[in-house]
Amino acid sequence: MLTKDISASPSAASPSRHCVEAPRHLHAGRDAQPHRLARLAIADAAAHLVTQAARFEGREVFAFTRKGDREAQEFARGLGATWAGGSDAAPPEELDAAIIFAPVGSLIPAALRVVKRGGIVVCGGIHMSDIPSFPYRDLWQERTITSVANLTRRDGEEFLALAAKIPIRTETQTFPLAQANEALDALRNGKLRGAAVLVE
Image 1: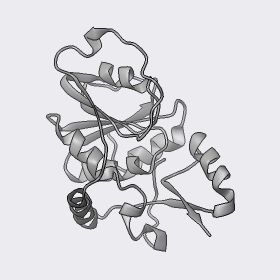
Image 2: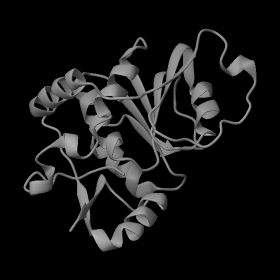
Image 3: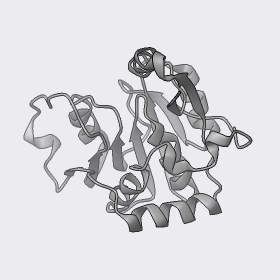
């Protein structure tokens, strides 16, 4: 899920190859009164890009991973996360925003419970499982749920310019095209760090 520096790798040359959605996630998270930014992430290439961009902008990042995934939590801390824990854990303080990368609808009520009054929960996936019912009090006090859709040319240009300033560090894991199913299994089971890349 999170990364080490592989800047010498040709596949690391362009962050946009790993996740074109990252600029939209970051913009959506900025709509809160953002000093603290929460990530509810299980396995997604965008998570480590957004973390680095948020830290560069001076935001605190609280990283949530799969339950018990200590390796991913350690990587998050290595990228500058203030705190890292499982998706079943409570952060040490209320947060301004949460960005959910995992396609798991049950994380939305969990995120609402950790954002403060006026906070925003951003759903970053293209698909997501059904959202379970939750009490209105979890949404009350002007909390917002929003989704991220399509990347614009301007989003991409702004993010690439920001990525060059930071500079963004990426990690990829390559799979032969014939092993696409294995790549999907690795993604589902939280065995990937960064992005999976299929090659012929």
